[in-house]
Amino acid sequence: MLRRTRLHLALIAVVVAVVMAFAAYAPAFAEGATTITILHVNDVHGRFDPFTPTDAEAEVGALAKVAAYVDNLRKDPGANILLLSGGDMVHGTNVVNLFGGLPMVEVMSHMGFDAMTLGNHEFNYGQEQLLVLEEAAGFPFLAANVVYEADGTSFVDAWTIEEIAGVKIGIFGLSPLETPIVTHPKNVIGLSFIDPVAVARKCVAALADKVDIIVCLSHLGYDNDIQLAAAVPGIDVIVGGHSHTVVPAPELVGDTIIVQAGEWAGNLGELKIVVENGEIVSHSGGLIPITADMPTVAPDSPVSATLAKYNKALEEKMAVVVGSTPVALVGERSEVRTRTTNLSNLVTDAMREFTGADIVITNGGGIRASIAAGNITMGDIYNVLPFDNTLVVLELSGEAILNSLEHGLRLYPEQNGGFSQVAGLTVKFDPSRPAGSRVLEVMVGDEPLDLARNYAVATNDFMAAGGDGYEWFIGARVLFHSGDWLRDVLAAYVEARGEITVTDELRIVPVN
Image (cartoon, rainbow, N blue to C red; front, top):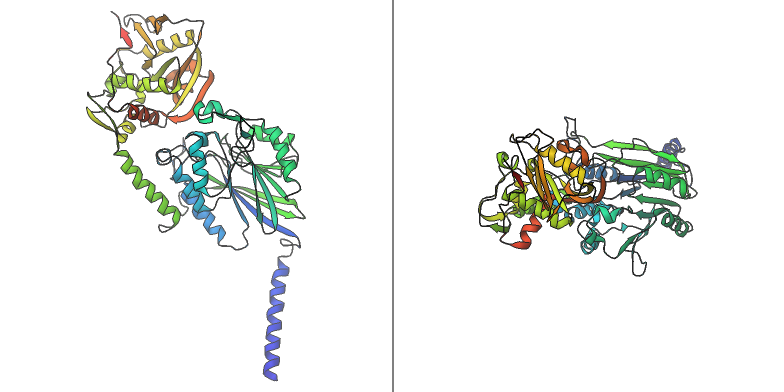
């Protein structure tokens, strides 16, 4: 009897201790209140590995480190995590570009992403491949404002509903209206990108009686997110992207919380919301910098296995023969910075064909190696164009083009990284004349350059921003900016031809 009494008293003591322990946390876990942690990234652009920001010394970032951090949080059974992406994930580095985005969606799947909106760069591989990626991901790609022109039906799901700890969360996605001009037009044939504000209102109305909380995954950019929040009541949270904005702490516009995490997995966004009776009663959060001293995923993790698989495949891909050349292609520094060569002609011809531009003006300094006669491997092309330069088409007047050509010739015959390499036009110049007045003749096809006419000019994103002193490119109207790397464009151009035909035509001709 005494033994039973002691046992009974011991059990009572345990129960009392447990009750008191929970009582100590009563304010945080009040009846009906649930804390949910929204983790978010945006504009990762294929960055699995660390990078060093401009004007910084220490490396930051790495999606593999984000994965380790998320895994650690999930060890808490009460963590209530929702992992989301604001878009532009699947394009931007060798390892994702050369495998059509598959490495990224496989890693995201292993990380347990719940949803992603479609950024403009998600379309870079074309519609068919984008749908393949969604199938491989196993989580929804969302874009409520992207529909088929023929019948107005959605290209991908408009929204999804997740339930976490009894809280129903409706998540819808919005893609940027400018997508048709920032990806190749062929990638969006038959699709319409419609007013995100009007679509957001419809999504909120449709979800309001189905869920407790509404989250918008927006790839519209920070300024547009602010306008969206003001224009569309009922959105509880906007997880943003596209503008690569670092929002250090959640911002409130009306009743809408706005967050965004910068770019390239340099930060992981963390937003904690406390939900009671179907409403957010409080929130907190900010950005978690992904620093060099943070752990990465374990070597035997699914994420590590996926990265190892694709890195090995990347090495093999670099050895793949994409074509051949009967003669050596000249890309030596002393050559491409002082004259046109057969390799510079090949590069600019590829740029012109891909964009359909009237002319091409690019910088000789962007070409960094020659290719020997014989087989051309993918690695050869990546050696020629090692920079992450993308294609841009600008609208420039004939006068701006003339000034730009004069600028490219100002240091001749000295080596100059800004020496103009061109396609679609030929230039005759007199090197004995003063810089700024050397150009004698510019022919666009069979016609003289018209100083008053506007032309579509293909270049690279470095020069479009005024690189190498091409100030006439700054602020020009952008006709096309797909995010396609020059090296990928050149590789496709060579592969389509097999054995290439090269020309030694001098397109910039000195006349004495």
